[in-house]
Amino acid sequence: MVFKVLFPMTSKGRISAKFIILILIGLVSFIVPIGIFLNHNQGNCNNKNYTLPKYVSFKDFDLGFDVSSVVINNSNKTVVGAGNSSEIYILDLDGKKDYPTLQTEFNGFRSLALNEEVGHLVAGTLDGSVVLWQSDKSSKNGWSKDYIIFPERQRKYISSIAISRSGKLIGASSDDTIFIWENSENGNKWELRYRIFSGHSGRQVFDLVFGNDDKTLFTVGNDNHTKIWKLDTQDTMKNGDQKDLNNNSLPINSLVFRADHNELVLGTNNGKITVWNVKEKPERAEEFIGKHNSQPVNTLAISEEGKLLVSGSNDNTIKLWNLCTKESFKTLSEHKNWVRSVDISSNQIYIVSGSLDNKIIIWKREKE
Image 1: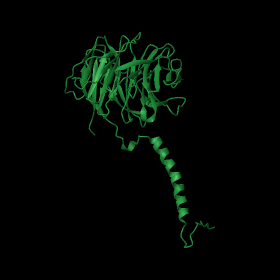
Image 2: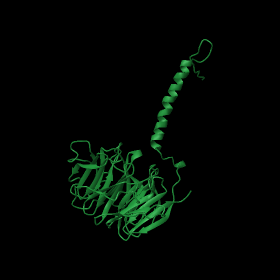
Image 3: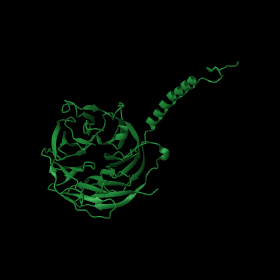
Image 4: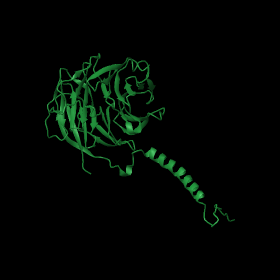
């Protein structure tokens, strides 16, 4: 049996132009959605063009005290480090320059946050104070000698601190209280906007991070819950959207926001890394392949292009994770005690880590 396909013809025996246009429209309508679907699922994770980076210990600094927090200042290629000392150290990533420390009146620090665009360095102290420095290009270490002490002092140490992407909000947590300040008058004045009591059922708040805007805050605590706070609603101080992303079994110690994918990456108390999509909101977070020897994950950092995750743990190691495959591909094992803080430079050349072995280690990417 023979089937004949009849096309609408013109009087001269040619296929109608209108018919050709309709065929083309149909093809575009079919192909474009497929392309969008594939692009959505691949995101920026084209593994064919992604070479897994290799890092080696480049330089280490023994500061003589437990190091609790490190952040990289990409604008002048330095790392800021703090811990059980009244001084905050500024170290050259290339190991060539010496910078003066930031002198303070405090006994020590637990947390640091930095926003290069607005030029703010914020620190949480062991006595419950929040301190802010402004960038100063005339200064040898890049920061003002004088600092602002926020008047709202908490009862215990500031366990975590964060600056929103716009630099307008600063959040700090201690025991079960969360404070959020708002910037006004070009950074010269900060006003307390929210004071959230019993954010995690009377348990300690371990970590917090802002989302893609100034309206969303994520927190994790010792009550095993992840909470989402909508800061533009009237009942923010009373209620947070509670999520049990890891079967409510273990505390989540650390978190970081993967902005390009709207994903929340979480470090658990048993060494696992999980990820939760903020928009799709599945019931459970997806687990990564591999873990930190059943030890708590204290700290997380994501590369600027969103493909590399760095984690630090109580097993004294740093792990590198491929965010495209959600697999661990490298373990860095130079530290002799718990790794409390990690960060990665915007160009991915450097990783820095701070540990309770009193050291800050700078890891440098090998040339490919």
